Image 1 (spheres, rainbow, N blue to C red):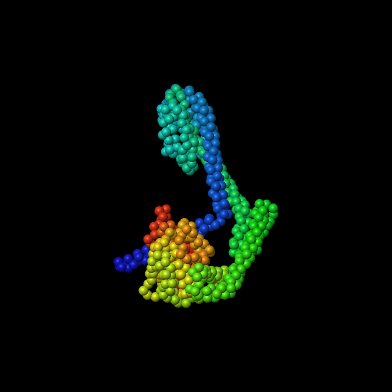
Image 2: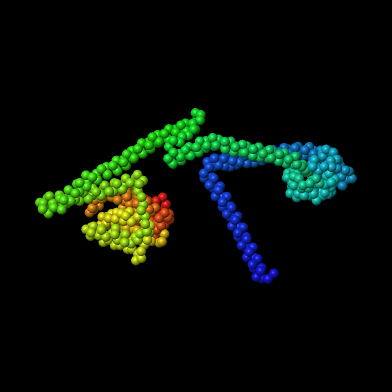
Length: 566
C-alpha cells in the first residue's frame, strides 16, 4: 500500500469516526433534551422520580444498617462460642499435659494428638467444620485436627500477628481468609497460651464463618429484594396518587386554554364531592362569570364602536354646512371689525381640528370593525418621505427646529400603501417638531433589500420611563407642561401603529429624559414577508444609556408586532 493510499485510508477512517461521534453526541443530546423537556412539563414524572429516589435512599440505608447489624450479631455469637470453647479447651489441655515434666518425653506428641481429637469432637477430616491446633514451640511440635491441612495454609490462616501475640502470653483473635482444603473461605481464628511444667503450649481454634456469611448474604438479599419491591410499590402508588391529582389539573389547563382561545362554553366535568370536585365546580363558576363579563364587554365595545362610527358619519353633514358658512365668513373677514375677523380665524382653525378629529375617528372605527384594507403597490419611498416632510417645514420654522432629511441617492422601492405610510410619517415628524425644543429633528431612510426603516429623531425633553408604553394609546398626551405649538387629536400614533401592523411592520418608540425620543418605522420590502430585523437601530448612536443597563440592552419598547425585533 502506497503512502498516499494509506493517508487517504486514515483520513476516511477519521471522517467516519467523526461522523459516528457526531451521531452519538446528537442522540445523547436529543435524549437529554427529551428528558429535560419531560421533567419540566410533567408534574407526575417529577413526583414519581423524587419518590423513587428518596425511597431508594431510605431503603439503601435501612438495608445497610440491617446487614451490618446482622453480620455483627452473627460474628459476636461465633466469637462467644469460640471463647467458651477456648476456656474449656485450655483447662482440658492443662490437665492432660500436667503429668509431663519434660517437653521431650515420648508420650507428649501422642497426648497432644489426643487433645486435638477430643477438643475437635473426633478425628474430623472436613476443615469447614472447624480446626483445633496445639503447638509446643519448645519441642517444635504441632498437632492439627485435620491431616489434610498443609503447613503453608496453616501458617497463612494463623498469621504472624496472632502467633506472636500468643507466644508472648496473650490471647489474640482475628478473621482470616484462607484455603484450608475446601476452597477459600473466611475463618475466625482465636489463640491462647496454656501453661505447663515444660513450658508454654499454644492452643488455637479456627472456626469457619461460612454459615455466618451465608446467613448475612441471605439477610442482605432478602432486605434488598424487599426494599426494591417496596420502592416499586411506592413508585406505583405515587404515580396513581399523582394521576388522581394531576389529571383534573390537566383537564383544567386544557379547558383554560380553550377558554383563552375564545371557546367560552367550555366547562370541566364535576365528579364526586371532594376537593377536586370543588375545584372543578369553582372553575366552572369562574368560567361562567368570565363568559358573562366578556359577552357584556363585547356588547359594550360593539355599541361603542357603532356609536363612534354613527356619530362620526352623522356629524359629517352638519360639519359640511358649518364649513361652508365658515369659509364664507373667513373669506370676508377683512371687511369685519378686528374682533369679528379674529373670531372668524379661530372658527376656521377649530373647524379644521374638528374635521381632523372626525377623520381620525372614522379611521379608528374602520380598524375596530376590521374593514381597513391595504392597497399596496411598488412605491419609491424617497419622494414619499419628502412629500411627508415638506408641508411641515413651516411648523418647524415656527418651532425653531431644523428639519433635516437623510435619504439614499438611489430609489428605495417597497410594496406599501403610499397614503398610509405618508400619514405615518406626517404624524411622526409632526410630533417630533412639536417636542423638538428648538433643536434639530432628523429623518433618516435606510433599506437593506429585505426591510426598509424610517427613523424620526428629536432632541427635546424626551420621554420619561414608562411613557414609551403609553405613546401609542388612544387620546394619550405627554406631560402637559411641554410647549405645544399645535393641538392634536391624540389619535395620530394610534392610527399610525395600526397602519404599520396592516403592512406587517413595526412601529417602535425610544426615549430618555433630556435626550429626546426616536420613533422607528420598519416595513418589509415585499408585501407579506415576515420581518426578522430592522436596518436601523432603535436607540440612537448619540444617546447616553443609563449606567444600570448594559449597552446591549437599551431601554426600547416595541409596540407593534408579535415578533421581537433585533
